[in-house]
Image 1 (cartoon, rainbow, N blue to C red):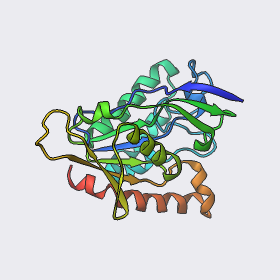
Image 2: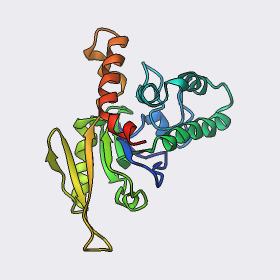
Image 3: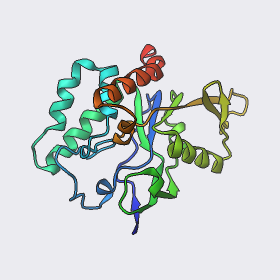
Image 4: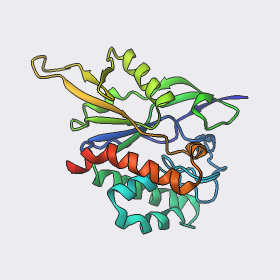
Length: 233
């Protein structure tokens, strides 16, 4: 079974963004126009899935940037208001967190075909990519894109950039690309680094003996990757 879906959320890339967290697309139930299938404790926003284990991105980011706010994170996740009331509260909470730490969030897929209602990236076929270049000029401090997965997100980002005549270059363990000058041809080309975040989705848990070891390993890796962002806050 195949279904054409559109991404349900607008990118959040404020002018002050220094690092952009880039994923693929939310699970199928988040992309339903009515969103009637969202489950208990799902958050109607990026990385909001809670069922069958849950996506750990927000837990990891709060442990790294705002450990003192972990209680607030739990409270926001457990809101019992009607969905139409809690969705704007939850979205505003995460947007304030991102803004405070000069982070942005988006997914590379704007429109896509999904097979079998699966949340796996290999069941998604791009129709249209998010036009990221629209945001590069409006976020002049953006210097790093973190892809939440190498297998698809990074590949799709590379494909999108190629359509814009922008090409990734291997640089040590990371990649980078140069943005072409649009106005001032004499100004230095702007470099943006691309780094890979280990996937925070529950599927990664299969490689670890328990949830605790999975989370602790991810936290160590994420803290190392985000250390430069923290130091420049």
